[in-house]
Image (cartoon, rainbow, N blue to C red):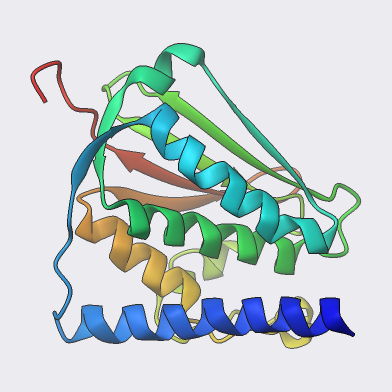
Length: 193
């Protein structure tokens, strides 16, 4: 009972934080606080949070990327960065709960144009093509059997898009075989910062 109460309290805390963050952003009460940080340092902050988030669900976390990308600096608001990934991983677990592969992959790489891309992939059913643009709309929940069986409010991905945009980055989603992959691209800082 304790574990159930604890994990439900954690889930409700994430929901409340999302609602509060969304309210602050919609009122323009919150100003982004960007700081230069290496990819490696950002991942070091992120990894333990995601591992503790995934532990009760029985999902594995796999983080992979080229070692040289870890030294690349990006400009982020660390709290927002963490919240983005917590929301994406939460969705990955919810929508791939019945998948044969119980893993969330996070990959980081530097694109040819110099930007750093982070990808969060699950191994669930993916997203219907006609739903791909709509999923970032506030309170939108796709209409299928899986979403009817899955707890959610439809604010997580809308908040992800707002937080990403406020940090002058981009987010999109593609289907994989199997699963879905959310990609976030940040501009890399030059040597002068």
